[in-house]
Image (cartoon, rainbow, N blue to C red; front, top):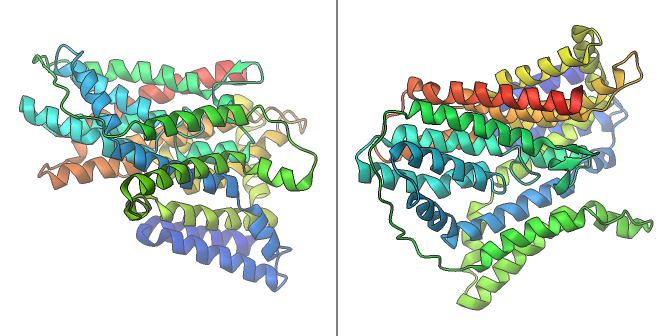
Length: 439
């Protein structure tokens, strides 16, 4: 077990400090664990490693990214944002509504893609009103991160939870007779709205928005809505008995997303009589995340086989002294702190099996429902990234856009918005999850 733990720590440190090479470090780490299994150091075969990969999750990410790319190209998000701006009275509300809009989009679209969609609107408004775009884009970024935990397709971490806990799209809204994590996130969004209104309370200049963007194609919007509808419908399909059909059943969400993406691509090819769209969409897909997750699935199965997961779970259990509320609190706020400095994707992927094991140890070994801990992990890890400029990809993207536009982003500029926004949203979500799922 010690060897596996040391290797995992080294792999994680390398991924942390050599972020540019994270996918290849993860793949190399996975290969190393498979080699250890090959030499019988652990009872871990190549088939075990490949079987541990959640292909449904990878297909969902791949298909969703493709559909989102088409959705952005249609200019529908920009049109909706401009439409909203015509309904607000002043700058304060314009920033708050733009942030809320970014959050709404982010519940169904990747956070980075959301920032890329909405940031140009924020820049245009800032230029028009002659105000600094820095706080505007920071507000958009942190709101995008918040809503990533709201639905199954909102963020990679949500997709990871859905795959690990066998949760479908509707489970994020209502599960086991209780309201799901979606409502906790919305309560956090409402609370954080008041934070934004307070922070921008002095920005009272009147605004007169104009809708300039024209939607070039409504079909990608239909694809997005179809994806949501089909994911909901797929949740009602009963597991088949036939083994071959069971394979398709286990991949159903991923296949839905990929097929819809292919439909959109083929339509573009037929419409434009060119295969150029494959190149355009291909550039927008985050292959690094897919490769990273592929490697991580194998690594985590390797350390699980070596007994590391059990040992870490035992440590958490001892620290909490068999107290579910204390354990829940540790998971939430430790996740906030860790995710402020490290990427939440490998963190959540690693912690899900740990949390599952801890839940089995509670109540004197009788165990308890793990969902309160799953949701606490997701709330903490998703929102924790908003504490620092480097805590989430959406933050890094927003800051990069600002720098390209000649704007200097100081750490204090980010912390002024990110810290109060995060703390308020986390505490609200933390209280909601425990009251609904823990008590």
